[in-house]
Image 1 (tube, rainbow, N blue to C red):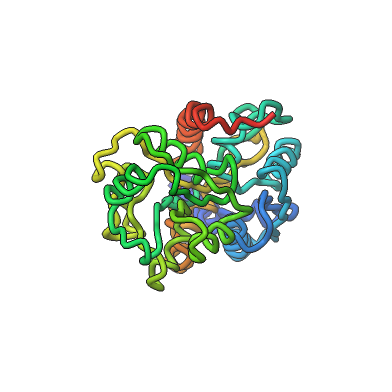
Image 2: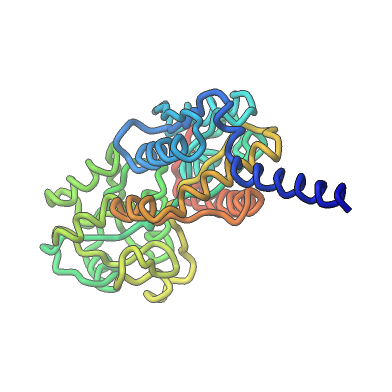
Length: 325
């Protein structure tokens, strides 16, 4: 009887120690490098820095952000695809890197599926069609009627050729039979400036670019590019409410590691990052910058999402004529 009690006590002690040291393995590891394919200041960089800060607090492992901009985020993707699969190098990317670029570029040194280990989705960012109040347009149907009535006179701004915003505008123009010309800029901020100045009539932008200007009364949001509305921008309809069923596009951010990461390593990262993104102050920081925190239920769930998103962008890129050599 005494031996049995001792055995139960030992099991309870081990369980208690494991519960209290869930993230101890991180503290003994090398620095976690969170790689972003964009320069400092954008939403991807912000996400990486929030996660790095909270990851160090949660796990005791030092985490830093490495910005590797260039080639439409391909430099960062290639770098992580070639990193050791030890869980100490991860990538913050999204639609552009893992959904669009595999179709946009004919020759890539990495494969979006084979060369990465999906960990979790991190955030959703609705794309918004908006105009300035001077246009005196309040709905998407009004915009469509205006563009059809004045062919060759309307254009939309995007952060660049091959971006989700460009492809969304191209898809809308094609499906609705609009003569809406694309004006590419070098980033979301220059595209916004082009619309606010009156040089371009319509902006298709991500929520971090559009929402602050909506709050300031400088832009009128007409519709989201996604099928359904979003709590992030209340009162703004999605495509379905506008009678358009064939367009459903959201911007998103996620986290990947190199291929062949061990399941236990992937699991520890998933658990830590998920816990971070459920913290109320982290949710508030994301919302402040017009982003919704949204995690996957598991790495496998994220993997399934990535494959579906990748398949969706294929015909969109092809129909846009934006394929790069």
